[in-house]
Image (cartoon, rainbow, N blue to C red; front, top):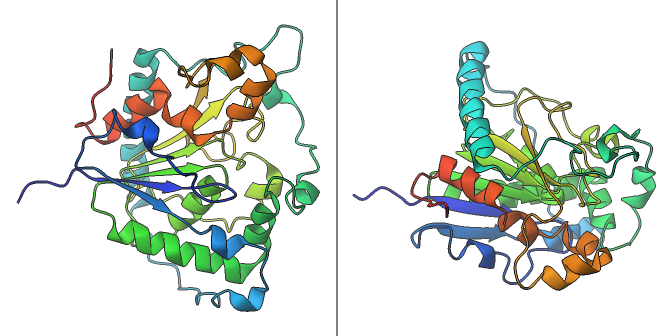
Length: 290
């Protein structure tokens, strides 16, 4: 039996998976690689909680594996990923391209009124609040996502964009889930209002090959912050202002303000060379253009 080409499982942000979300992958992933978008927007819509499936029972924690051994092997894998990304030459040190004299976003205090913002119907941001506040909705989303991850042909790469990064990280808590690589993009997990709402738990070093977190310097959601300080298992890669563009986004790049609007799109991240190199590390059958 021929080995599986693997799967890329996409977990969307607010509003659901956009049509054509996987178009940037057309020339990157081998034809046999499954591209799976798990849609859970219906579970976060403005509907009575009674219409959402009841929360799943909480399973007792599984026995902990020899943690240090798995962690050491994981650190070595992450170093190999970091070396590959450094050789690609796209990502930059945090804040390197930020205008001189202005405080870098990642250095600003975490004082944004996110608890209120994430619970207002602005650009669908209230879906984040529903996920964080409602155990029933949260459990229903996790049930759907975990089922998709277990059905996906291995090896599995998970891409969590925006709210999807929160969903993806929580899904790793299921002891049945194994992924070759987790890629979080445009993640709000660096903000206390989001990260503090997650149930704490040890990172599953034995079941995750890599964790790459990608931050576009103009993306207003991560606001220049990486995840490494709060989640040491993550390797942060910071994209410069012009990363992830093509002919269809040049006009908005030149416009400046338009670039701010497109920096958070999943297509901006999926088109970046950093993402292609990461896929090559996770799935060696993926080629990387010179």
